[in-house]
Image (cartoon, rainbow, N blue to C red; front, side):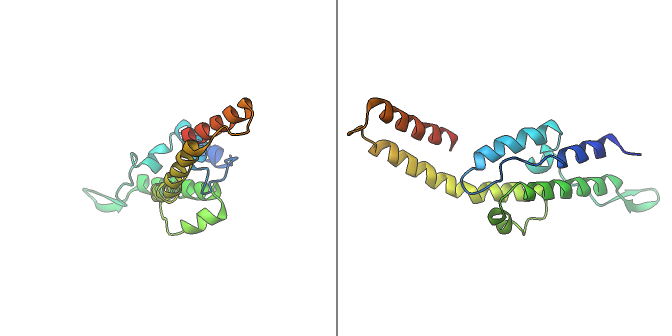
Length: 154
């Protein structure tokens, strides 16, 4: 018999993220992935608020396997695979060493974070250097708004 938890997992993992993570779209990717995970109550795995439990439990009969641990590992590994599938092969290849979904989430964030900081610096420089020059006012304002929008996103 299928449990509600396994039904939810099959449901979320059948949905592919329409945007694959690359070096330039982390915030967009995160804004699409995180609500999906929150909606299925899986964000605790990647954010560390649902930590892995001990593999065995002690009781009056000694040490026994912890069934909740096995379920946690199974869910985490499905989530890990799903996250890998939501990335470009370039990014996923750099994250192959990650063994849990939380580790993948954190390393992906730091990997693209350096790119994001350099992009912000570049956009700020472009914003300060942009002049109207021979542009029509509408073109100039559109260009400046584009830079500001990109800065906001970054």
